[in-house]
Length: 237
Ligand code: URA
Image 1: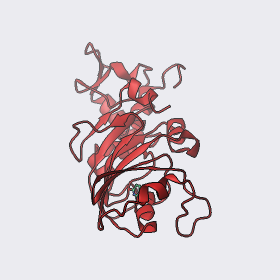
Image 2 (image 1 turned 45 degrees about the vertical axis):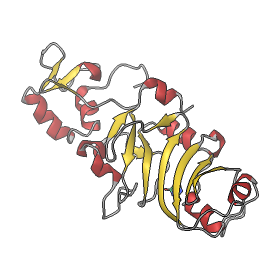
Image 3 (image 1 turned 30 degrees about the vertical axis):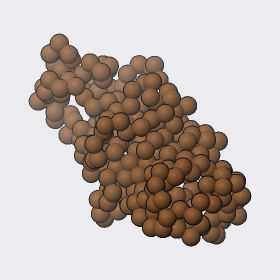
């Protein structure tokens, strides 16, 4: 809406995924929508969504939504996968929102941790752009003890992944135990962490993303999500 006058409620609420326009029109006729003071609202009203209630409850966040999800292992970031998908962890309405809510980059099915999702296309592109250089921090549990030369290899800026022609940007490796490493990347290539360890003769058995820029999961349990604050969204650049 960008400061323009609000859309008619029928369209705005259907776009939040509450139902088709026909279904939402029926909900309006049933008097389900009111303002915060309890005054009934009508489908063609133009009213700030923050002041709209459905059966007395606030609506879902309006467009401009960015959330963090603590993705568990076993879920994919796709909408099409026949198995468990990250959208299964959100209210079913969120799958039907327009503009669509999309993962900001991806985590593999076997990777857990911090996943951002947004309907803000500009924010999505800012975060995943190679120019952003936003640090992403992973903890990798390894099949073999570290040899000791991996940090230099990852930091070199010359490491080439199999079937690629552009070397990786320098990455930072910290050894937490012989088979546990913290890796900080500033880019996001396909299966990058797993392929980096494969390139130095190791194998990642468990992978978790702890942090993106200044954001971390805090005490958010696996499978749970929360909306980012304005300050958190701004910290993404
Ligand atoms: N690197 C990987 O190998 N997998 C992820 O999910 C993220 C980064």
